[in-house]
Length: 242
Image (cartoon, helix red, strand yellow):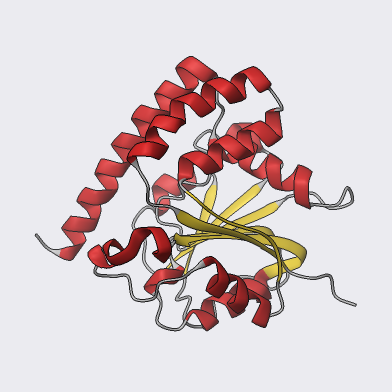
């Protein structure tokens, strides 16, 4: 199987799995789309009252899984995605997502100081020189803007990290926090979670429903036991300019 077909097959399997769990969550727990409470969590917890989310960009976006599928519920937000090559432009446009093409190892075709939130999920571990990516993130974030970066935690993945032959550079919580500090970011939040732990935490902090939290936590506790691999989740902020 070619590498392209392998990646397409992998994405298809993950998409079906995510769709199944999404239906379960919506049916039994009334959990909204991930973007709704994820961005509300950032707005409530980390943005000042005089700064609201408007422009959001997903770097290395692929299918833009962090963005909502029903864009009509998010008219106040503008969604952009950037990828080195993506044949999903028409599909993304149907979700009101504007796609840009660019190489994150070079200067990218996005306006500087524009974006309030940047998502960079499972990308940095594929780069031999992450400094270019981090520099680009800093340049296109607005002052006070926030970036979320996700990458496998080598402490829990171990040698399985290299089962994906495109992985070239592993990270720990310390090493990832350090490299963002070096480039002038303020680290707001850094933890090693699996996606289910992360969702539980953000959902509870957004909704503040104790009963929903207990039910949701119980459901995902099973997944936590089965899936011990965790990702580093780091939230960094570009300082306001003097």
